[in-house]
Length: 223
Picture 1 (cartoon, helix red, strand yellow):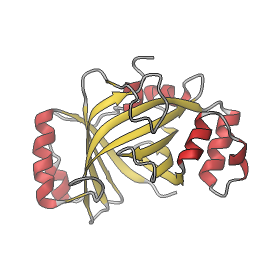
Picture 2 (cartoon, helix red, strand yellow; picture 1 turned 180 degrees about the vertical axis):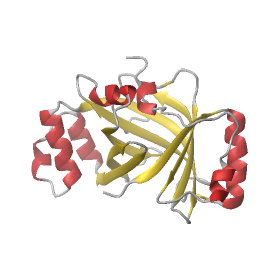
Picture 3 (cartoon, helix red, strand yellow; picture 1 turned 90 degrees about the horizontal axis):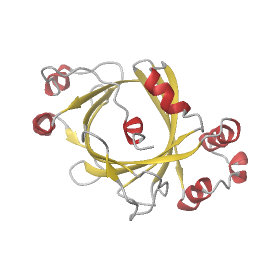
């Protein structure tokens, strides 16, 4: 399992604008969306005891989270993902789903998953059956992403984070959402073995420390 370093920082609007301007000079906007900006919607899974939420809040070193994700509500590119964390390192497994498969998972029609040729689909099936994982909440936000080839660096600025409350329909464009408390803005930095100094300098901010902020946890505030 290939692990990547991950940093998260809570930042201000002014910080976001300053970092964005610096990154435009040295890095390339991600090829998704318009100039690296796009809308992200994720449907997160948890069990009746809120295992994923509790492990995050308790700071458990080894943990995982399943989600289904799409971009700009485009149903032609839907990802099933499992984010695995070991300390400050992360790994993501991913495979594609169809809109019909997403619908079946939401409705609890799972039998087709057990013999699917995608290992991640079979893993989700097993954990839905044995751990009681189920669709829990939608998380929406706008993302601006930049990439820098040396070090395989990816920097993202996430803002306008909203929760879908009780709605779990990933592809429902009319799903009502509300902002999470505090309107947080998140700077995320991911890299492989080393973080180039030019990127480190570009994201440097005074009085900003690494944060354990979780969009999923923030969106569960209204439960």
